[in-house]
Structures are given as structure tokens and as C-alpha cells.
Length: 333
Image (cartoon, rainbow, N blue to C red; front, side, top):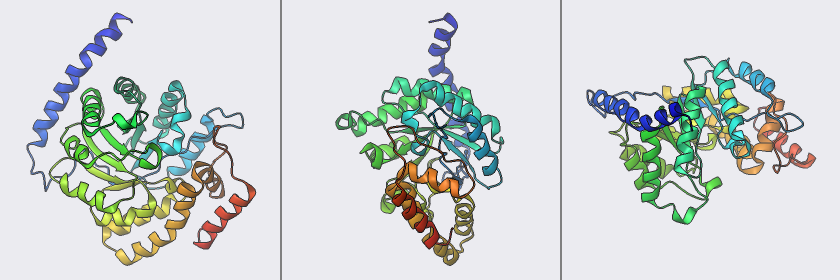
């Protein structure tokens, strides 16, 4: 290891500690219940699909093309390398290059959240630092889950605390039990919300009672709750969520931003009507047909979807027809 690299690695925890000590002092100047969050996550974030060529290489030209089309939609920002980005199927160098590509195309007033969760704490820290260097504003860190039985509340608190301490950018927790088989325990969320560099959670579990309790129990912290699905976005806002990271926003970005707007304005009847029309399409591109369904639907709305990486398989003709019927029945096609 080069001396400069070793020196940077050894100094990083100390520098991070100074940085977040200053932030703690700044936070202490305001009243917790009345203060605006220091890092506003309010709004809609599409978790970008990663485009691949017919030979299953990352297609950066198509990624840039999708980003140009998304530029006209009032998203709060973008999520790169989430579950819908086929994050587990990308090599480390591809992950970093995808973030760099998106950062170059993304206006500075839009946030870039990048997935950096790995199975070990050390690997997570290293990738988080790389994501920050590539231009990410926030690290989205999924729960480690391979040794699920050993992922106790104490183990997860220790993991995320170490990541939060070492990360040069703010951290958002990511709980996605459908993929990991692990719900980040409420006790862990409440404890981690007190960390000055952990600013929120993306919760994809769909338990509105749990989300409301998170908002309530962390209300005096600089901590925000993001809904992880368009299917329960309105309900999440009703219990105090700040925004949403929604796969369907890759396809129906404008309607989801409109739903966000209606909820913030308190126009609940209009919001309810719109939410109802989004539930079935969202279920189709997530739980029912997954990423292959999401990418197929993107193509109908002017975006590049393209193939998934193996072993994810394309939809059958019958599945494509069912997917199209779902969007048509709800007035989107």
C-alpha cells in the first residue's frame, strides 16, 4: 500500500470525527422539533435502472440518454445502484463509473444518492468513500444479510455506526426485507438516528405503522423517513414521511412528482385518486415482474430499458401483455 494511501486511510476517522463534531454543534443551535432538516430529502427519487447493451455491458450512452429525459421532471434527486439498478450484478469499477457518469450529467441542485452497502463493514466503508469521490452526495447503505442469523440489533448498530463515523458524506439506512429477508430493527433505527452523519432511512417494507412510529420516535433528531415504494407513498406522507424512492418513477416520474405535490398541498382527494391509479402499475414493475418488467415498461414511455444481466430473464410474451394491460387499465397507455 502506498504511503499516501495509508496516511489518508489512517487519518480518515479522525477527520470525520472533527467534521461531525462541528455538525453536532451547529445542530444544537436550533430547536429539534421546529428545525428544518440540515439535508433536505423531501421529494421523489427514482432508483435508476442500469442500462445494459445486448452483450450485457453497461451502456453509458443509453444511461446519459435516460438522464436527459429525466432532467425535465422535478425530481429531488436520483438514486444510483439501488435494488432496481441491479447493484449486486455490477463489478466494483462499474459501480464507481456509473456514479461518475450520473454525477457529470446531474445538475448540482439535484441530490445523488448512491448504493454502497456491502456484506462487511470494511468493504462498505471503502465503497462509500469511493462513491463520495465519484460525486455522490449521500450513501444509501443496505443491511448486510448473508449471515442473517448473526445480524442482531447490536451487530447492525455497530456496523452502521462505523460506517457513519468513517463516511465523508451523509448516510441513509436502507431496509428492504423483500430482498434481504431482514427488517432493520426499530431499536436500531432509533439509536442510529442519533448519529450526526446518519440522516434518514429508506424503508421498503410497506408497514405504515412501523413508518409512522419511526417518524414519531426520531422526531427530535435530524432524521428523515423515505417511503420505498409508490404503492404506499400517500399513506407514508400521511404519517410524516419526507419523500419517496420509487421504482415506478423510472416510468411515471411526472405523476409521482404530482402526487408528492398534492400531498404537500393537502389536496388529499386528488392525491387519493392519483395514488389509486399508481398501485397496480407499481406492483407490476416490482413484486409481480421485477426489474425485467420495469425495463420493459420504460420502453413504452420513451426511455431505454434494454436487457437485464443474467440470471435475470426477460419477460415472456404473455407477461408483456399482462404488464401492458395493467398500465392500460389504469389510464397510462
